[in-house]
Image: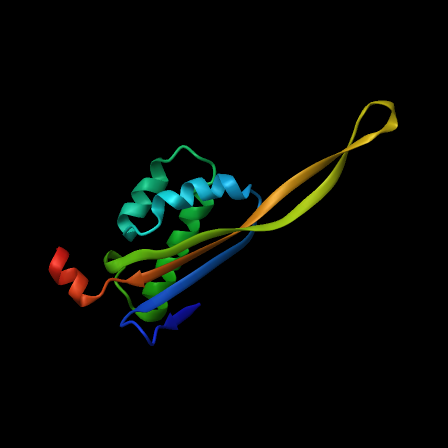
Length: 129
């Protein structure tokens, strides 16, 4: 989803991945590291992180940048992650057979990951480059 913010002078690209088979807390650990960073720095961080959660998040960041470039014509070098959040998804419940004919519950947790990319403003680029 691509939005034009009325209160700020930038475009934002929002990407949402739902029902990722991963615990909320495992994904949150990776998301906290990339929040507020530039696109290129984020890619470098995610490629070298040893966590399993970094791969789906890396795919999501790639997708958001591709949408920004293709749909809005934005330069990938000027993008940064303005908002990144993880929310709890549904819990898939199964039964595992145990001794004496009993069953124990298996809870497979899922999460929803939202990433919003924004373009750095002209003022920001002039003062910090």
